[in-house]
Image 1 (cartoon, one colour):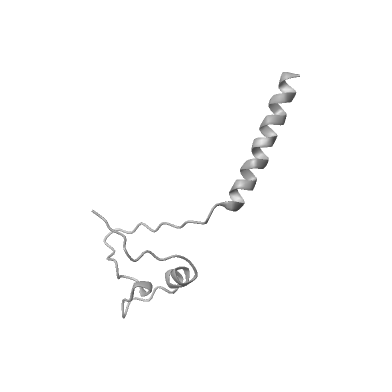
Image 2: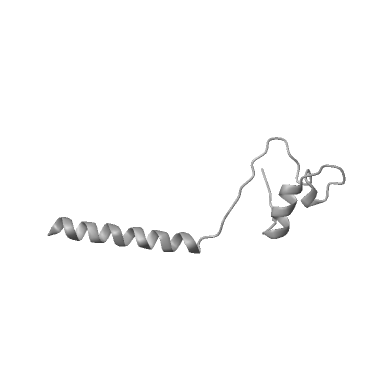
Length: 69
């Protein structure tokens, strides 16, 4: 009987995890070595072309005031 309760509890947690996964936002973090804040088209560089990053920035959220030490 105890193992049945454990199984029911675990299956319930699995359903809750699937429900919570639908509610969380998608987040993409870019890590680039030696890239300046304006080294892509989304931030206004006149000659560097980054169409995929530009499309992500247009459709999503773009940070304009991020700082790095």
